[in-house]
Structure formats: structure tokens, C-alpha cells
Length: 187
Image 1 (cartoon, rainbow, N blue to C red):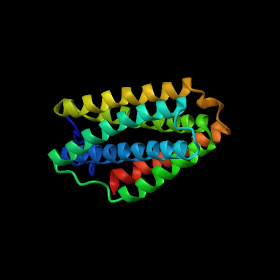
Image 2: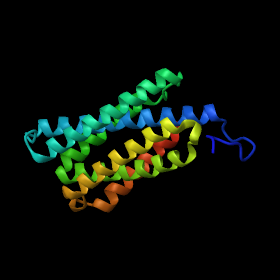
Image 3: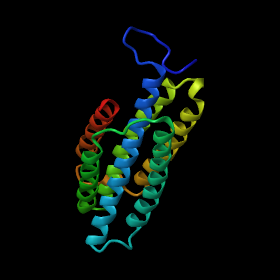
Image 4: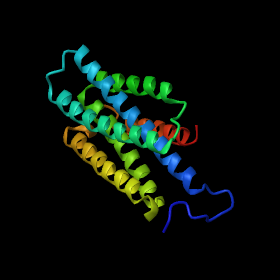
């Protein structure tokens, strides 16, 4: 199988498919870094920088920075333009991080669960769409997907489901994440 084999008139060609994958994944990893930066800032502001949540979030942030750096390299190598929405994702991500951390450690972890479950679906669809001609990119996506699932599991173990209004909070974050994915793929 090859990437973006034409199936219907108007389908994206291989180059367009790869550009969309790299663009949206770089934007997503950038947004994840900003969420964790917002959470870490709020934890510092509230005197919780020495707590368990801070340590967990700092570790997840390191992994997301590595993911972002990998997609930054791919953007340069493949000459893919970034989304023009990066300034918006910077503000929105940081704000979401601050807001959830101010709601408490479990709400910060609930944010991670919502984001990572959405990214799991997104990365799974991308891996299925990338053919053998893009095996290296597919492997990167699958590797990062595994990392994201580990973050979700860590957040669940830290009590994410006990966050105030967990179902509503995670549903809202997932909806926002899906919208950001849709927009970043295209714009």
C-alpha cells in the first residue's frame, strides 16, 4: 500500500497527505507543550511546584518537547509550512493549562486524559493512512502515539477521573482538540 492512493476524485495526493500529517502533528505537539507550560506556571504560582503533579507534568512536558522537535525537523526537511494558527494555539494551550491546573491537580490530569485520548484516535487514523512509502513517518506517529497513551495512563493513575465535573471537562477539551486538529490540518 502507498500513501494516499487515489480512491475518489478530489482525494489528496501523497505530498498533500504528508504535508497535512506533519503540519497538524507539529501544531498538536506545540499545543501540548504550551498546555504543560501553562500547568507548570500555575502550579508554581500556587505554591505547588514541589508536588507530585508538578513532577508528572514536567516529565510529560519533556516528552512533548521531544515530539515537537521531531516534527519541527520534519517540517524543515520536507519543506512543510506550519499552520498559521500557531499564535492562537500558543495562547489557547497556555490558557487551558493554567485553567485546568488552577482547578486542581486532578483537573490538570483530566486535561491530559482528554487530550491524549483525542490524539490517540488522531494518530491511529494517520498511521492507517500512511503507506509503506512513508514507513518512517508512520513509525514516528506510532511511537508518539504509544507515548501519548502512556501519558493518559499516568494521568488516570493520578486520579484524573476524580476531577470536578470530569465528564463535562473532558468532553469540552476533546471537542476543542478535535476542532484544533481539523483547523490545523487545513490552515
